[in-house]
Amino acid sequence: MEAAEGLKIREMKDNDMAALIEIDKKITGKDRVSSWPQKVTSHLKTYYPPLSLVAEQDGKVVGFIMGVIMGAEYSLPLSGWINIIGVDPEHQGHGIGRTLTNSFIEACHKRGIKARLMVRRNDESLKRMLLSLGFQQGDLVDFVKGFPAHRPP
Image 1: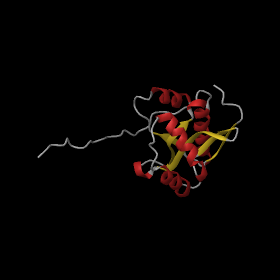
Image 2: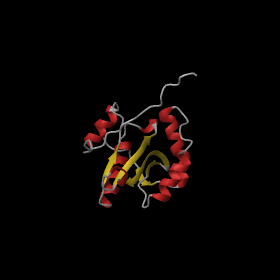
Image 3: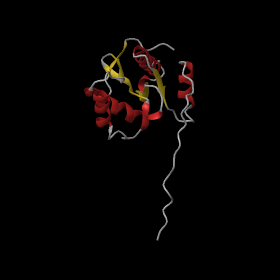
Image 4: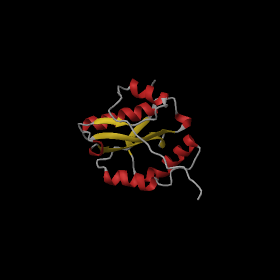
């Protein structure tokens, strides 16, 4: 699959926020990004050099990947962690997600670190893409404990 013609990958900037929110709304059908302004600002200021990228086509943001450098939290070596990736549904199927992910991997390798991410167990499409890019399943397994059922007095 070839990337869309004229696609440019660049570092994310604060003023990309509106485009990211719009893409996420198109993908999820929800306004779930109320904390994003803090998150993007935090990413861009805390994790320097940044590991968050956007894909532009004809001067318009059509995709993004937000990542951080961390590892000590999980007793792992420092790695580039992908937190979220999104491609405008009108531009999906043209290799933009793959190009963004490869650009992220390249940015990690330039820093001498591995690229990592966590995925939902049932997201077969994303897992297939990651395996095709050379990712392997890592050592982490997440555990979750819900809240106790509410019992009326």
